[in-house]
Image (cartoon, rainbow, N blue to C red; front, side, top):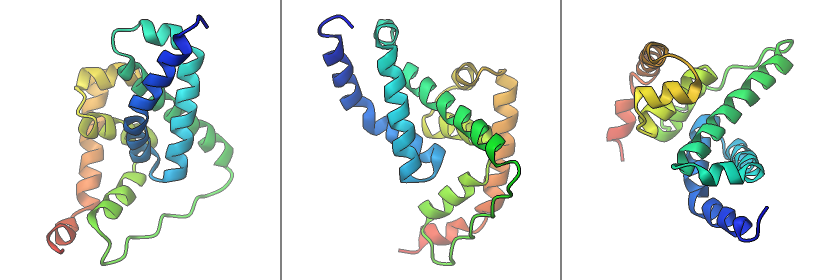
Amino acid sequence: MPPGTEHDFEAFARAGQRKLYRTAYLLCGNADGARDLTQTTLAKLFQHWRRVSATEYPDAYARTVLTRTFLAERRRRLRDLLAHRRADPPAPSEHADLRVTLLAALAELPPRARAMVVLRYWEDLSVETVAELLRCSEGTVKSQCSRALAKLRARLGEAHIYATES
C-alpha cells in the first residue's frame, strides 16, 4: 500500500465501525457473531482498500461487503449443519422487552430474507439498492420483504403489550 493509505483506512474503520457493528448485530442476532462479522468485513475492506477508497461511497461498499459476507457464512454454515437439526430458539418469556422479542423474531427468518428486512427497513435503503446489494431483482426484494414482514407481524402479534409496559 502506498504511504498514507493505511492511515486513511484506519480513519475510515474508526468512523464506520459502530454502524457496521449495529447492522451486523441485527443480521447475526448476537454480539459475538456481530463482532466477528464486523472484523471480517473490515479485514476484507483493508485487503481491497485502494478499490474501496476510489469509490464514491465507501460506506455503501462496506455495507455490501458486510451483507454478502453474512450471507456467504450462513450458506457455508448451513451446508456444514445439514446433517444436524438445530433446536428451535426458545420462546421469549412473557415479560421480555420488545427488543429481545424482535431479535428472536428476526432470527426465525431465513438469512436472505433477514438481510433484506434489515437493509430495507433498518438501514432505510431503497428497493433498488437492496436488489443491487443482494444481486436479485426488485420484485424479489418486494415479495420476500412482504413475506418476511407478514411472518414478523404474526410472530410479534402481541408485542404491543411489551411496548406499553414500562
